[in-house]
Image 1 (cartoon, one colour):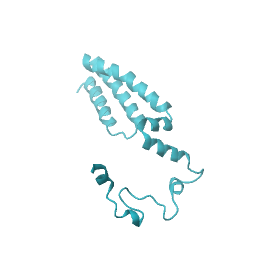
Image 2 (cartoon, rainbow, N blue to C red; image 1 turned 90 degrees about the horizontal axis):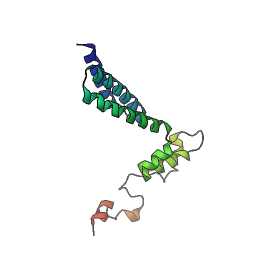
Image 3 (spheres, rainbow, N blue to C red; image 1 turned 30 degrees about the horizontal axis):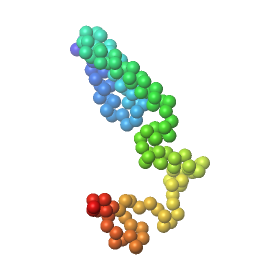
Length: 136
C-alpha cells in the first residue's frame, strides 16, 4: 500500500466518523478533516473529480462551522419551529441555581401526562384526539 492510498483510506475513515457524530460542531470538524484528506489524496493520485468535489465542500463546511459557532440557541430554536422555541424559553426561565429537574417539577396533581391520558373524570368518555380529527 502506497502513502497515497493510506491518505485516501484515512480520509475515508474520517467520512465514516462523521456519521458517528451526534452534534454539529464535531461533525463539521471531522468533515473538514476529511475534505483536507481527500484534497490531498485527489491531488497526489491525480483524481480530478475527488479533488474538485472536496475543494467545493471545504468552504461550505467551514462556513457552516462558523454559523454553528456563532448562532445562539434561541435563534436556532426559532428556525427549528415553535416546539423547540418554547422549550428554549422554558430553559431561560429556570430559577438560578436550580437543577433542570427542580425547575420543571410541578406541584402534586399538576404533572404533565402523556398525550391521550385524561386528567378529569368528565373527559374520560371523550373520543381520542386522532378520532376527533378524522371524523368529518
